[in-house]
Amino acid sequence: MTYDIEKWDKRFLELAKHIASWSKDPSTQTGAVIVDQKRRIVSVGYNGLAQGVNDLPERLENREIKYKMFLHCERNAILFASQSLENCTIYVWPFMSCAACAAMVIQAGIAREVAPYSENPRWIEEFELAKQEFEEAGVELHLTKGIGL
Image 1 (cartoon, helix red, strand yellow):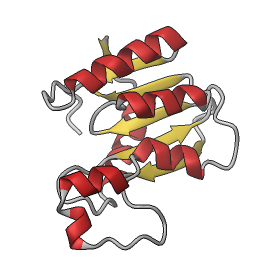
Image 2 (cartoon, rainbow, N blue to C red):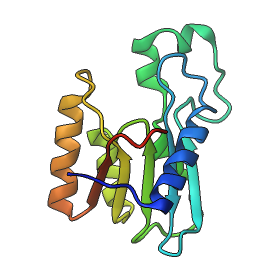
Image 3 (cartoon, helix red, strand yellow):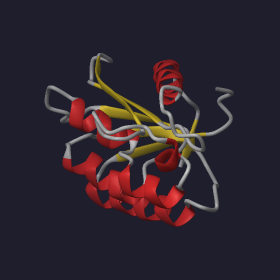
């Protein structure tokens, strides 16, 4: 399932990595870039609290609270898009979408996801569920290995 990364895919993954750095999450910063078929950026997102909700240390540093309150980067990118996402590609950093975000990617009409390959044991079950969802829904999943970003 891993493939040799193409020039444009590398560029957009690098941008997703940069956008991830905007997150205030002290443990895991994630970023997403959605582009159309002409390689135009449609939307971006990073993980964090909803607009207007305070980034308080007791929220950011408490994993249980943070997981309940944070929006993932894919969700933010989908919510902030101001046009149809049909047949777009989503680039996600530093690993592929979780199962819930995969479902949102599918529902939004996104046709392809590109993300770095990860064997993070904490997320392996989520990744396997997301892979199943993408396969059943016909969303192309490209996991990159060793791209040096």
